Image 1 (cartoon, rainbow, N blue to C red):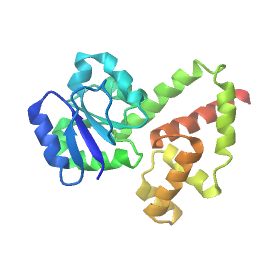
Image 2: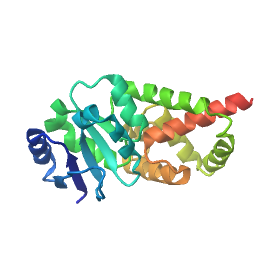
Image 3: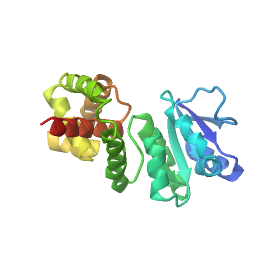
Image 4: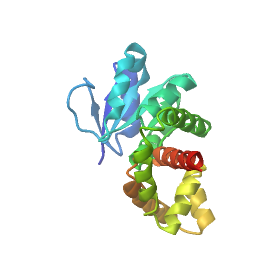
Length: 215
């Protein structure tokens, strides 16, 4: 079982989230996010970020997936946690029905966010990238070489991920199983050194804009 930690001071939310996950995961409390800990995923109460914005820095931990749980959080805050490295945002009201699915999603390397926000997140990140185009030129050339290592089928999958398609839609369009799609994605993530489909989409857009700028 995957290890899930809950980072919240609210005992009612902690009990609710534990109840939603305990049948499928090992669930326990995380009392200090800045101390050493080992977890596959952390449920992160958005109230913690409202009280201390500097906690955004913890999402840079590549060894753990973070799912922020909030109540009617504004879009700009949801985007902010994603661009800082969180794997997703989930409304607390949706937790009883969707939390187990959200955790499974981020543990599989996907992101959990409203589909409408994906292009906005990509837009913010690529805008930041364009502002630093010159220092990143060598890095992008390396990414182009990594992209060339993908097979034809992997390129097809990657391009459909960039368009925001789900694994199910990709499988249907390519006449393959969802398991095969996941296998392709795992290979793509490894070859391109990205953590999830959002970072993959961002990388592809960066490369596209770089090539347009060089044309």
